[in-house]
Image (tube, rainbow, N blue to C red):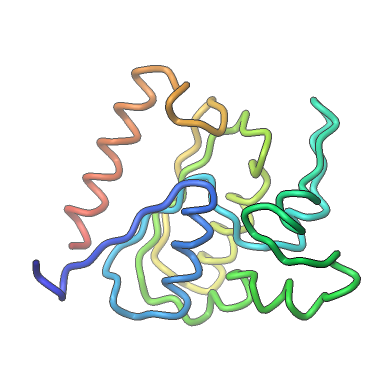
Length: 156
């Protein structure tokens, strides 16, 4: 393994973890964030009008496990939202999002626009798909894989 050519990729909570990693560690030369979470506050207050769903449980007691509401521990939500540390990122980031994702579809735009505002190397690809890549159309899934490999080829 070449320790100077390490990439990182994550989907959903893994996308959140990828953003956390690249804000705290400078060892990654390329990153792919798919259906990632950049801001726990916006995700917490997001609401899906199509299925009347909110993310309270996911964040308070689920994967993120903040253990409190936003109003009970606002500072913890800020500390654990990678968005507030994007200025530290040196890693090129490919942001991927399904536009029919009912869990975190509203996160990709702010992630991408924040990275661009900070003059970070970033690209975004949107697919007319849902959250789980296992349910994506074959053509879109192949395009996703091709873009990921191209991204890593370019920056690693």
